[in-house]
Length: 205
Image (cartoon, rainbow, N blue to C red; front, side, top):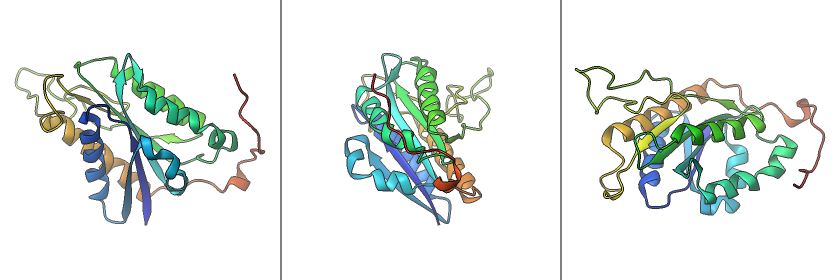
């Protein structure tokens, strides 16, 4: 059994819907156990994250980056970073904003760089862009043409019962399913004793 953890923040419910779609995709893969964690509950779930073979990070894009609540979680992981406890785990990410672009790529880059600092192995979306021709459709997967992770758009006058769109939810499901499938064949994190990393403390700034 492989363990996939999804940790997310949702300010208005839209990114929660996206997170649930990622979860549904991941748990559709036999042999994979999935935990869905709201970032507000991260302090009670460190052991779940530490035991995961893959961690998928999700946050709305606010002001060209991760939300403050999610950034607080990223910063709180510094003790694990100092010990490289998440080294060689799989990682992936998703994000949502009101704009079709909304600078979501900057948020996914932030998440990917965070994963790289932890020594994790990033899994991209693995889809060609959708809706790129006159005969295309906004219902196609990856209609927002992201590659680093799953992107979604939620119009500000629509609640989470209507947004993100069906296409964006299906794209999120694809990401979860892809990470789960890769996790099944992943050897997993190396034993900490093999990393050569000595116990240190994060340097305060």
